[in-house]
Structures are given as structure tokens and as C-alpha cells.
Image 1 (cartoon, rainbow, N blue to C red):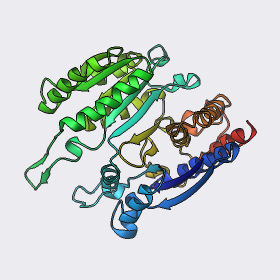
Image 2 (cartoon, one colour; image 1 turned 180 degrees about the vertical axis):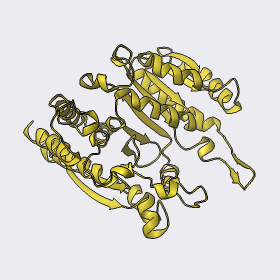
Image 3 (cartoon, rainbow, N blue to C red; image 1 turned 45 degrees about the vertical axis):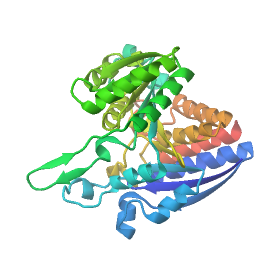
Image 4 (cartoon, helix red, strand yellow; image 1 turned 90 degrees about the vertical axis):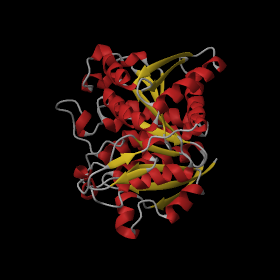
Length: 353
């Protein structure tokens, strides 16, 4: 197979983890006889500094004409601490999602047996946690009408039937491929948009009679994720709720550096780690590259190259079992490995497999 991959390294630790993802992808392609070509493009704070736009038109064109995007992270404290900034790195993310029509964000939440002790939750709660959060990505408050002055501000939360139906369809179809349990998360007791979400979900549920469909308010869901994460199989929700819940879910595994994600929709899919740019760690060779590397596994699996994806997962599990880990998940007294060393170990494992 021939693959053309757009690589958006972004900010902070982005370039460091991106390099490991690219090396792993290259190793897998060489092993399985695929041809891969990379085209690099700027985004985020890096792009603002260079051209004044967090997602320049040239970057969009590169993404649009690629088979997939391997994305890393955006964000910089100089924008975080300036509430009056007119242009922000995160706007580039929103623009990318909107222009590529990426309406479905797929975030698997899982635990790793050798890391259960790193989870902030008791081991008996998390040892069987394995679920997927599906977040609607191009609607809601993030894209609604906005206004701000010195005394008043508002964000409009708006959804159409079409937007809701297509993301619920993704949720039901994922549930059919897994344990046939779908939880629709909303705030239907307060929000009109949530009531429409619930109405449409109830209309669609009979089309999937094998799926057990339940409904949960977002505040209850946030508590249930902590007290009983193994309850969930597939969770689907709107943009803002999904943003918060998926970050909460990522902590279950013990480190945000472990979990990948995919954004899919009308155009080129994007594969990225769930964590941010962690600018304080930039250049220190301590960032965990596993979420980026597992995003590469999701990329291969998107193209039904499942053997390739499984080899990456096997290599990641082997690295964890061998205690080849970055500092935040290393066992006490274990050998110190950096971003580059973990990536190189996994590449070597793939080549020898």
C-alpha cells in the first residue's frame, strides 16, 4: 500500500513525540512492504509565530491531499495567559476539524496491567476498564456564535438533526463491533440541545436492537467514570461534554501519555495523542511517546491494516513489560529512559519481530 502522510508536529513536546511516531510508522511500512511519504506542515503557536495563522491555507491543502494526518500537539503559555489574544493555537485545531469535516473523535480508554498501580483509582475499579468515548467534534459551543466585551460574553450551543444523527450512527456502529452497549451522555434535564440529542437517540435505537442503549446526565457520567469505569463500553456525547469527559477518562490509565485518538469524518482522518503540548518539558527528552505511537497503530487500523496495528500494540506492551518507560510511569529504581530511547526500543522490536 502507498501512504501519503501529513505530519503536523505543532508545539512544545510535539516535535519530539512526532519523530518517534514517524520512525515507528516507517519501520512498520518497511517490514510489511508499504511505501510511505511524509509531508510536514506547520500549525499552532509555531504557525502563528511564522505566518500569523494557527492553521494556514498551505497546511490545509497538505492535509486535504494526504491519506491521513499524524498530529502531535498545540499550545503555548504566552497565549494561555493572555485572555485578550485574538489568535490562539487551539483555533488551528478547530479550523482543521471544521475544514476537514472531522465530526467524530474516537478516544479509546484502557488500562495496562503493569501500570494499574499508577492509576489514581483503586486497582479493583480500573483493572477491567475498556471503553471508547466518541465525541462530536464540529458543533456545539466551540463553533456557535460568540460575543465578548468587557461586561458580557456568550457562546451559543447549537446542534442540527443531521449533526446529531451522524455522530450517533458512529456510536451505534462502534457498539455493534464491541460489547453492544451504548451510553448517550447529555444534560437533557436542563439543555434544549440535549433534549434533541436524547430524542433522536431514542428514535434511532430501534434500528440497532442488539445494542443496549442507556442515557446518562453528564454530571452522573463524570462520577460513574471514576466510581465504575468498567460499566462503559461505548460513550457518545456532544463537543463540550466530550472534551471534558475524555480528558477525565485519560487519567484512568495512570498517564495522559498513554492514550491515542482518531478524528474521522468527511475528509482526511487525523490521528493524535490525547495530551497537550506540555511546553515545560520541551527539549528535556522526558515526554512519553506511547500515545503518539499508538495513534500510528490506529492509523494503520483505519486502513484495515490490522496486522500492522497489532504489531505496534505488541511492541508497546513489550516495552512496558520490559520497564522501558519514560519517568512518569517508570517503576521505582528502574532505569531512566527518555522519549528517544523508548521510541528507538519500539522501532528495534518491530524490526526484529
